[in-house]
Image (cartoon, rainbow, N blue to C red; front, side, top):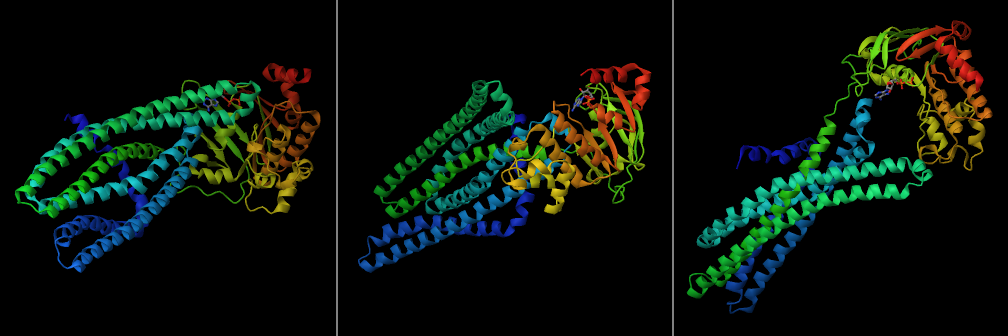
Amino acid sequence: MNTEESAARPRPLAALRTLLPFLRPYRGLLAGWLGFLILSSSATLALPVAVRFMIDRGFSDQDPSGIDRWFVGLILVALVLAVATAGRFFCISLLGEKVIADLRERVFGHLLHLDMEFFARTRAGELVSRLAADTELLRSVIASTLSVALRSFVTMFGSGVALLITSPRLAGMAAIGIPVIVLPIVLYGRRVQKLSRDNQDRIADANARATETLTAIHTVQSYAREAHESGRFAAAVRTAIGAARRRIATQAGLTAVVILLVFGAITGVLWIGARDVIGGTLTAGTLGQFVLYAVIGAGSIGALTEVWAELQRAGGGMGRIDELLNERSAIQTPHEPAVLPARVAGELTFENVTFRYPTRPDAPALIDFSLHVRPGENVALVGPSGAGKSTVLQLLLRFHDPDEGAIRVDGIDLRQLDPRELRGQVALVPQDPVLFGDDARTNIRYGRLDASDQEVVEAARIAEADGFLAALPEGYGTHLGERGVRLSGGQQQRVAIARAVLKDAPILLLDEATSALDAQSERDIQQALERLTHGRTTLVIAHRLATIRRADRIIVLDGGRIVAEGRHEALIAQGGLYADLARLQFNQ
Ligand code: ADP
């Protein structure tokens, strides 16, 4: 065996070791399982002995009641076997469910804290697949594979010892066959592991494809691309089947070879044993006992081969989950984070900030950007698409840290803060409001989970959302559909504003929608926003003239740099980019 092979072999089991901490809280179940396992294995190993006595003594006994004793014994052994097997099954299945539930929670909780860069390079569908398919694989591993593995191991060992005791001569002969059986298992095992990882990767691909398509169902149907998408999904599924087929074929081949070898060996031993019985050197009962042990032992070796392949598969799955758990967010909370007051004043400072997105290291999104916003000031960011406006908001929410320079809230560097505490002081109304597939009340309450129904309605009123929400079939209890599809764009936006109103944060970030709203909706939203910005530090990515005019100050961005700043009239008088942008708006 070459070194690469011997280095790779223990890997799946090493990956499974990371499961151990998850087993720790359930020591009781684990102990129960081991107890029942020992009991059921002992009962299994006692069966052949009972059978031998039945044959050798029971049949030759003159007294008919003699045979009863052996049969009663047999029934008792069966009873123990039945109860212990049920107990074993119960403990290990429950253990599997509990451990996997914990693992899922851990992985999901961990994912929620990862940074935006991670989510930019990882598809949501793939994560869901890992969360579902890989953990499911592990569940079956704990609930059945590990159980079968240990049980088979115990019975294999026990029957081996029993074989030796029953007939050392026959056992010696059977032992010669063992290396012939074990070798292919080891050799095939590695191949199965690789194929299994392939298989899981293809399943994750297919799942990611499905999630993406369903999320964009509106676009898919409006372009009548249903057949095209079915085709793409089918192709992804077929690739997954192709990978599964190779794995299954390898596993099936392995099973066939092992069964053949095992039964070949048993037949050989039986053959020799039968001659011994005829020659009078062995009793029929002992041969029967020997054969039963051999069958039990061979069965457990057979089970182990399947288990070995399964373990390799699970090792692959656990490896992938471990990868996720080892992902670290680039946005770190310092050991002793600075503490913000319950409500910050809202002074914002950008000091010579230069920032590049990790996926675009060559093109800085902000270059030497400096800005000071007084508490309560209302600052508008304008500039062509790609100028860096959204990036300013992203950095302020600490979704990324700047490469150079610093950003401060009330004089405190954001890097000294726990991002969650910072975000607690900021309310964001995004351009594309994201509603959850839940009712209106729950969607608004997302801004402050302990808000009363009355406060929710109050917030909706301020956001000009009360009118249409109250008119819905079930009022605020109406389910808004997946991602809020049952509301119009303008309505969704007002729900998002209500959410921000409810949050009542001292710093407000607005990414105003450019989507063609009708005049009435636009006026409603405008009024809602005006109420919202009052008395808060506001940074707004402004697209509408109304906002721009109202702002205390306008910052004009281009190519990641500030190219001009001032009030509307002054900037118009200056000419340049702002005057061009304003002219476009006026002309429309
Ligand atoms: P604006 O909001 O002014 O339209 P952005 O701040 O979104 O501009 O983008 C500024 C620059 O950063 C653009 O060149 C854009 O392509 C790039 N950019 C924005 N988001 C990302 C991202 N997640 N990954 C890589 N580059 C990005």
